[in-house]
Length: 271
Picture 1 (cartoon, rainbow, N blue to C red):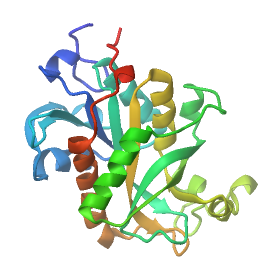
Picture 2 (picture 1 turned 45 degrees about the vertical axis):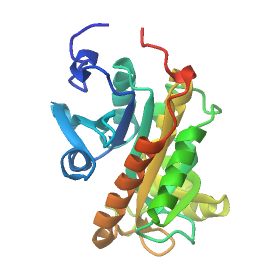
Picture 3 (picture 1 turned 60 degrees about the vertical axis):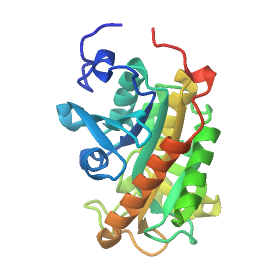
Picture 4 (picture 1 turned 180 degrees about the vertical axis):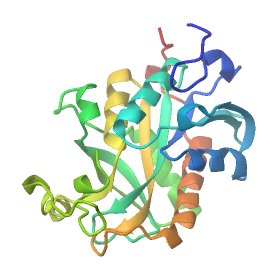
């Protein structure tokens, strides 16, 4: 493998040292990545790997000394697909996305957490990875680790199917808060349709991550803090964001610390 930094993430396998991390926590927001690496109890920052293109990445260690990568995917599936491809090239074989979302199901309150067991994929980037029919499913072992962590930490959580879409406004049927109040006919009423399909939440990255995991052969899971209750409003409830995001981070880190060892099927070295 080349020792040159990969073009987008800005670091190479050699920059990760020995033993190199096999797991990454992946955030859309570079500030959330920095928060995990620099401000979270139980996490020790070892090295800032890159802040290139806003795709901040950090090498940290957990309380047991295990190395962990904290990386930024950027917003949306196209950016995530680039970052995940390059993370795989440097040896990452487990990825937990730590994100935010809007609730679709009536029983999911703002400030709680949603753990995705699978995703409805309405994302163009994923079509370059696998056919439309290819399942977008989370790794069952990582997903159970997130559920067990949420239970252990006594935070409000839900397990369900996520709708991953490409746009924040039109694709999530926002008209009152959008510059464009006119939706395509196929998007009018889509939120209620998804509610009837028992879909839990909207977000913008999980399905492409899950499809990449299936095709590339790595383990992926997703946990999101709920910042909007779409049965009530389009608006993000900013006052509940900090605590909900902090709890999502805590659950992801607890899962990283207590999850079982990586299955042998995901240990193959990149070519």
